[in-house]
Length: 178
Image (cartoon, rainbow, N blue to C red; front, top):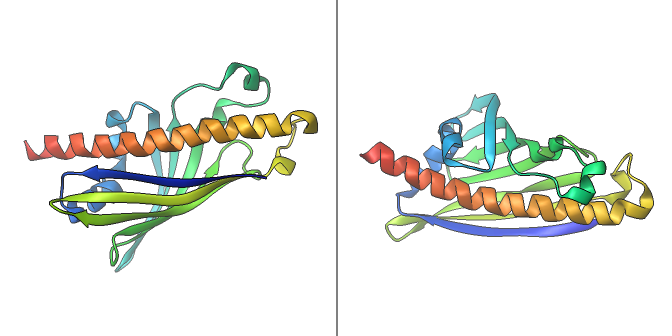
């Protein structure tokens, strides 16, 4: 079992309520601002009084490292995101399912949108887990190496997408204010 802690933060120079609503409600509009994301598809949305449930499918960019291409497909760069947005505390609880090795790869956590002076600090805490025993179709003698490659690839993509989305939201909000 491979496990990687996720601990990321980004600061945006806009009020928390605006940043939170933009992340939750304008995600599809943000794709042009994120080079590592080819598309986001909204699968479902349920709005409650204090919670919004979103299911989105993300199609990431990037490429699979050479030696791992024999075992990994571009499906590893696509995932379904299940998110519960809670307006009472400006948070989102999320979990993702990769479209490749769904049984083996687990990821989930919580993002907090915090007031930070005249801006907003977004903190993401979570975990990425890879169960090498569940890597179907991969010989056991290379499973550890492939799991390490998956962890590295997804870890870099999580970090990059988080930072890129923050920068994209900033550019989007700047353009909306103009």
